[in-house]
Length: 478
Image (cartoon, rainbow, N blue to C red):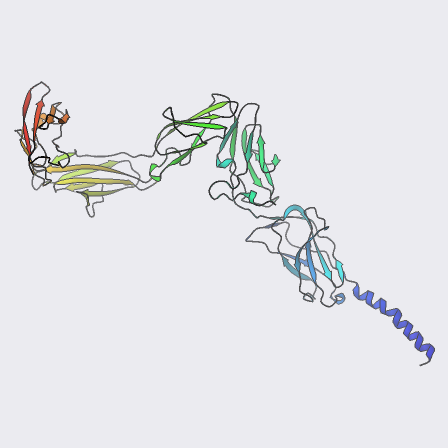
């Protein structure tokens, strides 16, 4: 080769070398594409896919692809990297990659783009789409979960999102990235934003966490706000409803928010009851006076407790002869009642019906339990004390209250007992009256007597309706 030709060849090599490098560096990345119209992520779902095309022949060694997210306005001045491939991992076009969005994502105009590192280039921006990470996605409370509020004429009332709120309230205020929209029923367009709302018009208000077009369970309870004037009634609510189930414990009475409070029961001020709520343990007429700083309003509630009624068709004291039985039946309006019968405080096996045939002397009890709704129980008692004929002709002067079923009580003729309007008076040895009744039921003594003396003596005076009198003594023996 001549020297002249050799020099020409070297010049051609140097001339083509930059051109070859430039051709190698040209890489075109297609616009990112995806199947979603919006991103609504939460802690259980946060995986999405994007697809892009490129020219594999122009990739440099160890190239990496990145998926970048714009800000909420669609600009990439400070993009967020959602995904980065391993060096040289993606070499086949088109490529599909998965990504997740950050927990502080929230807006309507996000965009994606794809960038490569070798050569360094970028795709065009994707179409805009809404994207929200629902970091808080459960109901929360406002106004301390009190459903009513009031303000004086010309004034206002402030509704606040509770932080942290009562019970297990998951307050969205714990997440600084969140924003909120306030609503007034029946409208569906937000009337305000922010952590609170100043109310100057009566209405029903609530607030939602702003997750744009994404559906969400992050919303508050509703509060009815009214304008109050002195003397106007406000409201009282019972946490267990009215009537309430006393067997479940207490019920919390709540009124509207004000500056100060005073609670009353049966028109008498309750000492120390000066909060917005009052814990009631029993039924009754309750009221509250609420001071709003320029006017005072009152409210009242007739708080009732769930009850059911029951009766038994035998008297308290009963007599049967040897071999006889006493049929006792319960009538009740309890819901799904259950029955248990007892003799001398011992459960009678298999006695679970509303009636029972009693044949043994002793003290009987039946418990009735309402098993549906408010679970409550009642007790009814009676006793079979003797097989002695209740139509006794003589007034006995000896009683042996030892619970053996015989002569346990002072049994007098029926002409002096319940229903005859006969006055029966019993006195001890010192003249102290131990019994005085116009409705004697042959049931004295009703409980075991502790003898201070051996065989104590009592005195009786029986006066009939027509003023006929009988007097005598009774000796109690073991």
